[in-house]
Image 1 (cartoon, chains in turn cyan, blue):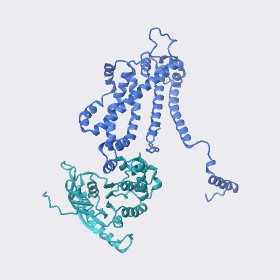
Image 2 (image 1 turned 135 degrees about the vertical axis):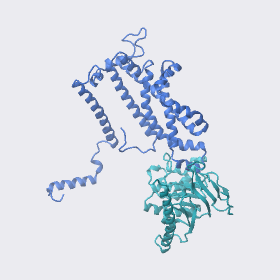
Image 3 (image 1 turned 60 degrees about the horizontal axis):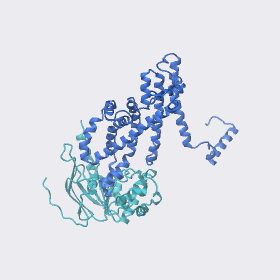
Image 4 (image 1 turned 90 degrees about the horizontal axis):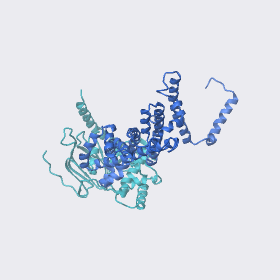
Length: 274
Length: 315
């Protein structure tokens, strides 16, 4: 594949993807492409939501931006630096709980600081502040298994915030929560986002969630994922999910996604043994 | 409930009972704390389980189906403790100048024998787990160690401990050392492989989180992987503890002074079924007790692991 010229970009941008492709198990007979030719610019402080049919590589893109996986082709930049390895500047929050069960809540939140050798007193102060921002100060000495799913996800957000990241990467963080908790968590996340001034790259399946949160919604095609279209959500916050504009956007995004989901299904059926 | 008319008094009683339950639930059953109740019920079922087994055996004896000379029932082999205990002085009976009445008392000899075997089991377990966890971690930490050590370990792991017995004697002669070596060799290879599979099973997210926080490889191992594999390792250790009890008897049969394996050998050579079953009962109790000890330790160390209660819970 002849490499395309790289479009120019600003070194102030939080995340820049240029011609990014990812092939899993590249060079083996199990190789399968996950992403193809992703071009994406995320401004500082911007809230971007990625949606697309399942298996389209949205999560893969987050892993690439986090630096946990190398891209097969192309380049990823963050604030003028090429992404080559994980960095505390780009925190990743997972769908499943990823709190260490053997540590207390505050030890979990300040884990990154303990890696740097920060003394315990200072760590606890930072943890308290981060937990205050997610409204969980009273849980500071508890253990993760004593918390509900929503509380654990808030602790995970606090852990990411304690590192003062410039970019928050969130991989379907609220997918495992019930609908009521999910709505609460969305409001909470918007508050945290406003205070922290970080850019957020948020993966979800839910069109409603995308409309509630995003400055821009990036819609992916079925596998291998490419950027199908970018839909700006220009509704002032707080947003009413039942306003005519929200309804119109929901219809628009649903229509765009339906084509892709149909394609993904057709492809899966073609692959399945007859 | 609709058709049956209740006498007024009975209804009255019922409401009162409900009222009382609401008013002071704590005063209703202040007899014993909940954990004591659970422990008592567990102990009760243990005794019932063993009791049923013994009762079946006794029944077969009473009906004349099992020959008491070959399968003496529990009341026979447990009934005469001094008679059995005098065989436990395996270390000094045939020494020059030691008569039947010198040396430790029969009960003392039983205690010494138990202590000697248990010490070998725990020494072997300690050495084997330290060695195998260290090597298991090194195999995953350094690719060179994996390439150089893992094939040999995998090749040697199916070798039965029995095959190692002559090696133990070649290397260490007779005594405690070969018995401990046997325990170590019986556990080591499996525990290395178990450690490696535990490391491979660590939740990827834990490692990814540590990576994004800037942890080095050493920190990831020390702060994430080791605590994450501890619960699985202690489970492996518990299973291997039972294996250690099995193999220590084989090792002791070669001659180690005091030891349960020596008693079993003696019983076999003198055709003494009562002594065999007495020793088997002793080993059962010891294995049970040491498993229980390890479980208490497990609960202490692994404070974060929720207690496994439910349909799959063993005793």
